Length: 325
Ligand code: DP6
Image (tube, rainbow, N blue to C red; front, top):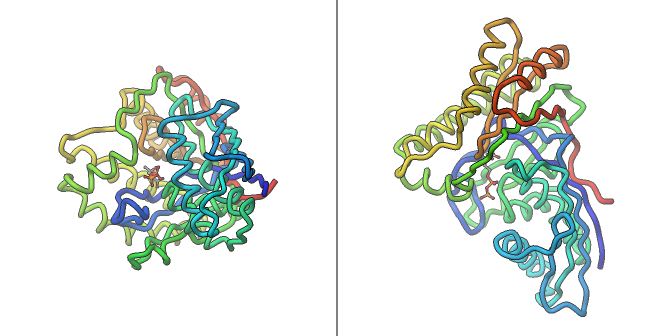
């Protein structure tokens, strides 16, 4: 009753922002992401008869609190599906994601956990079933089941049975670059879960956000298929700005940006003004991801590295889906 899996994190080009069902994690809108090669989590799960509760080690340390309760709640779901409510597990997870600097690892974390735990308990879900299950740990994680460009279909069923990710184009379809720009200080005050809820409940801009998604999605998928970088980048950047605009209209209002976040955004726009096609996107935190094509590697990297308040720049590209190890 032992298995291990590896999953990569992903960056949303069309953001998932808002739930229609908090318990089942059903989104208000479809989203689309690129799975990233450089950032991943490996997780080993072993169900043991001697255990009376789960034990979850993250990067070698036994966890408690929210990290622990989210993992056990998710394993409860897997135990439920497997019809083995009393089997508890020891879980060892290692993040190869700069979490300390506020980088989300929940996507790779829950995808690796779902794959390892289902296998360890004797289930054999196909990728669609695995994505559906993973979604219930963390929404964005359901997209990390697949490599490359991935869409999460929001579905329409109340039980979530048609809300899962589908592959759009594999990792080797298109070699675009993503620079993860990490800020020196991270004061993430509003978690994504809390922030999206507040936005759905109170932001007058929220309905406009939802209404804007179908056009963005159709256009970005055309752009991905045609490998039209300027089109894909421009849509992703505009979609990100629209998502962040909804937070400014929430009550109370909030923003994930810090002053360095804005400096990076302006530097990317300056690069473009100087003829370098680069675009940014930002999740529920202050760090920025910059998209560009390989020929601009040096220019983009040098520009980003020299911005005051930038701690680190890590470059990566399209990554593969979940795998067993
Ligand atoms: C801004 O997947 O972390 O990164 O479903 O509540 O666990 P939960 O939220 P999570 O939210 C991610 C939001 C986002 C956009 C995205 O990844 O699509």
